Amino acid sequence: MFDPIIALATPPMKGALAVIRISGDNVLEIVQKCFKGKIKETHQVSYGYIVDPITHEKIDEVLLTYFKGPRSYTGEDSIEISCHGSMLIVDQIISLFLSQGIRMAERGEFTSRAYFNGRIDLVQAEAVNEMINSETKEAKQLALYSLTGETSSLLTPIKNSLADILSLIEVNIDYPEYEDIEVVTEEKIENDVGSILSTLNEIIKEGESAKIIKDGIKVALVGRPNVGKSSLLNALVNEEKAIVTSIPGTTRDIVEGKINLNGLVINLLDTAGIREADNEVEKIGIDRSRKSIEDADLVILVLEADRITDEDIILMKMIKDKKSITIYNKKDLVDKLDEDKIYISAKDKDISRLLNEIKKMFSLDKINELSPSLCSAREIGLLKKAQQDLIQALDENKMGLSLDLVSIGIKAAYDDIKNILGEEISVDLSSEIFARFCVGK
Ligand SMILES: Nc1nc2c(ncn2[C@@H]2O[C@H](COP(=O)(O)OP(=O)(O)OP(=O)(O)O)[C@@H](O)[C@H]2O)c(=O)[nH]1
Ligand SMILES: [Mg+2]
Image (cartoon, rainbow, N blue to C red):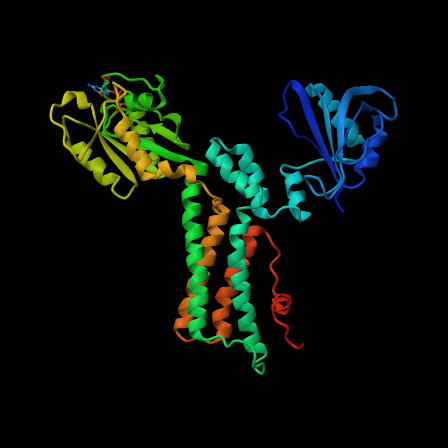
C-alpha cells in the first residue's frame, strides 16, 4: 500500500504548460472529487476543470490522464494533470490536493516506487536520472540502454552460471547419495568460475570506458608562467575566456571551460603558472594549480617550443604518475621541429595535434560503437567486488580447500550481482536448486 504523493514534474518556472503528477492509493477517487468533468478510462485524456470541492471555485482548465496500475510509471494508480504553466496555478492545484490528504513527494520518490513495485530494477532506476543529466548524445544513449533493460540483461548469463554452479555444489554437499548428479571437481570449478570471471572482466572493462563517456573528464592545463596555458584554453573553447598577457603570473584563479570532443565532455581547468612566488595572491593560485593536478583525469603540461627551463623539469617530475600529455607551444618561434614532440601554437589556434592525441588516448573514434554498459560508480564498484570474490574462490579451489569453503566466495559474487540489480538477496538457495534439479522426484 502506498500513500498518495504529488509533485510538479516540469521545471518550476513560467511556461505554456506545467505537468503535475499524482500517484498512490485511491488517487482516482481523490482527484475525481476535485475535477469538474468525468475522468475517462485508463490511458485516455480527459478535459475539465480543477475545482475546489468545498467552495466550488474553478482553479484551472486542464487535461488529465489516468494511468491504472500496474501500467503506469510508478506501477501504481497515477494521474497526470496538464495545467497552464503559471507557478501560481501550480501552487493552488498542489495546495488543493494536499488539503485532500495527498502529501508532497520526496526527491526521486516516483522512480523509487517504480522500483519497489517491481516495475524496474535498480539499474533502470538509476538510468532515469542519467537520462535527465546527460550532456552528450552518447551519454544519453548509454542511459537509454539502461532504461530499456538492455544493460541489466548483460548480467543474466553471469547470474545464471553462478546459480548453476552454486546449485550443483549444494547438491553435491547435501545429497551425496544421488548418483545421477554431476560431481563437482576442482577442475570443474576452475573451468566454470574461470569462464564467469573472464566475462565479468570484460563487462568491467567496457563499463570503465563507458563511464568516461558518461561523466566526461577533467583536464588541467599546467605549466610555468607565460607558456600559453590561458591562450590554449581560449583556443580550445574558441572564446576569449581567460585573460592573456605577456606578463608572467597573469592567471591567479582557476578558469574553467567545457568542450565536447567527439562526444566526450572535457572539463578544462586553466591554472596559475607554477613557480616560486612571493606574492600572497599568486601563492594561493599556485596551491590551487597543484590541487587541480591531483584532481585531474588528464594533465596537459604546456612547455615552450623554444626553451626548457629547470622549472619545467620540476613540473615533469611532479606529474610523472598522472595520465598526461606534454605539448610544446609557440611552435611559430622555432624553425626545426622534433618529430616525436607535439607542437601547437595556441595563439594561432593551431591545436589539432593536441586534439588528435586526446582522441587517440581515449579511443574517441570508436565512440560510435557504443553498447550497453554497466558504468555507474555503484555498478562498477559491485562488479569489482564480485571479481574479487571470484578470484578468492578460485585461489581457495587451487589450494584444495573444501567445496563449502570455496562456495562462500561464489555465493558472495552471486549476491553482488543481485545487488547491482537491486534484487532481494536470498540467503537460502534452495528454491533455485529445485528449479534446476528434480531432486527427490
Ligand atoms: N609566439 C607565440 N606566443 C604565444 C603563443 N601562445 C601564447 N603566446 C603568448 O604568450 C604570452 C603568455 O600567454 P598566456 O596564455 O597568458 O600564458 P599563461 O601560461 O596562461 O601564463 P600565466 O597565466 O602567467 O601562467 C602571451 O603574450 C601570449 O600572446 C604562441 O603560440 N606563439
Ligand atoms: Mg594564464
